[in-house]
Image (cartoon, rainbow, N blue to C red; front, side, top):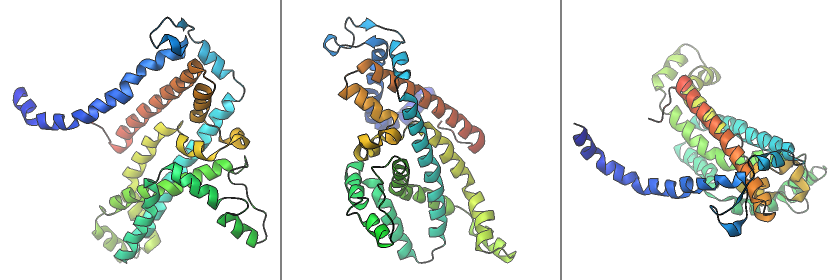
Length: 300
């Protein structure tokens, strides 16, 4: 029986073999570099050469660096803002699009809001820098036309984190909208008809039918996004920030980049990355457990 099952499932295992090989090559083999976090690493000696073992000194050095906890705060603030607003906006937009009757208009809107998801931050950062420019950007031109002072979206510590949050939501909410629209489409239309007969208007139908029908997927997406609590978005911030906004925009990933690649402090940089990975792993494990308990979601 076991051999028959293996023979039956063999094509499926062969299909995933190339993907599995890539995961091992790019995700598991590089984990050997974790040892750098415990060494006074000298690249010329090689990864497994006669490196000086320093134990936890790199971790102590990093946590005692000036500004480390500010960087940690920035990371959590920006990442949590993206998670929260990035959860609410697609839900609201999916509900609004679902109420639109014109199929052509609905499809056009879905395509337009979904398009930024496929563009890299290298492209979008150039667009945002032009749009948000304090001197010639279209946004500040409109602000000045109403008699207000221009806003330095990308050069002011008070506005930079919010700019990162809302620009990321603008880029990704179209993808989330598609997920929630697919969920709404699974709700039985007879429930809407029954609620309409009982006198429920559109708002009551949304509150008592649509949102409860989306509850499981909302809980699932919210729980699984907890694993990104320390991922504020390196690509986005690296392409948009500068020294003027390090105080509010510097996050763990950009800090590791400067510490490791620019300052060549490989041990401390690896220590920060390892701390981030451990915390993220704990959150991901907790999120999957919570998703199983509250949303009945399981991988296997």
